[in-house]
Length: 379
Image (tube, rainbow, N blue to C red; front, side):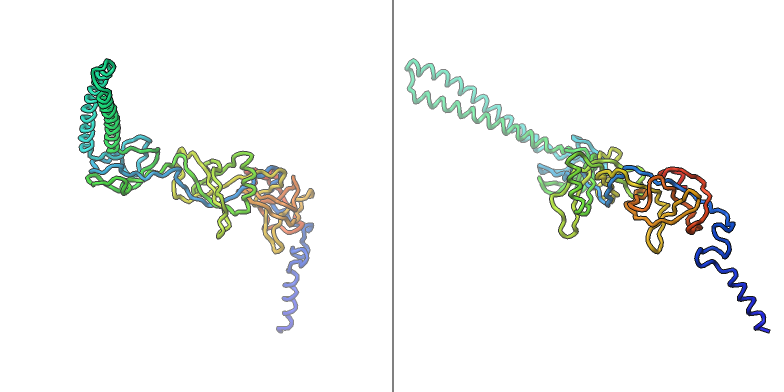
């Protein structure tokens, strides 16, 4: 009884197997009445493509100032808050100025005394000059009086310098910012005694403008130098997660040597950073545009598929059937891919629905003729 039903079952199984050649169920190839596969397409276009280098960099302050006291004394006042933006000339710290005010008064008094003595010696020298001319005094006595007058004049000059120095020391009691920037942690607080040129009181980072430092492989150095000689190179920088609105600057620095250990060279981009979106020490995605390549074939990145033999693209032929074409893929730019070989300009390529396609499948095009960079092809 078992042998009677075994043959019909096996016959039914084999009758429903797919055609090993076409991959379709037996008797139902592309021309066997199978409905067309709905697909979304785009057009391969020819355009100029920027040569871009991408890297991860970090922000660096345009300038860093370690604020130190230039005279010793008691810190009596702090005129800012930590992390505050300060402008050049803003008052930061005040030291006890009373000792320097006393010193200034003392040297000013010395100056007044020596000026009076110098004026008296000058008049005496004039009188003795008339006397020596008429022969009433000896020449040696006149020369002594004249030398004394010149000595007092020199003393006055020294006193004037001492007054200027005392004023400068008094001015150093009021510590001001030398740049526009952001203050860091306050390292010394009110009431502490500080020494001249000792520890930093605070660190100020200038962030407008700001540098972004990054490294690229040394193989790009000849191209970078070549195109820098003909004009500035554009650099884009974006904080991770904010790539849609990058900051735009220009390449400002190329290091003078390639790192022997990594084979990379350090570069710096300069950004105005008016909105302070970039910050020192922050990791930043960088894109350096070196040049542009003309007449490159570009397709939507969704069109590129990967098979056992490598990347390929389904191309729609005039009879609305598809054929897979092996391609050589170039650089990828956001939603577009450069095709070095295998696709011609204006070829219609499938961007959605590839999973249901086989060679020779009939397709139903939903948005035929859209350019490769059309937003509709990316839906």
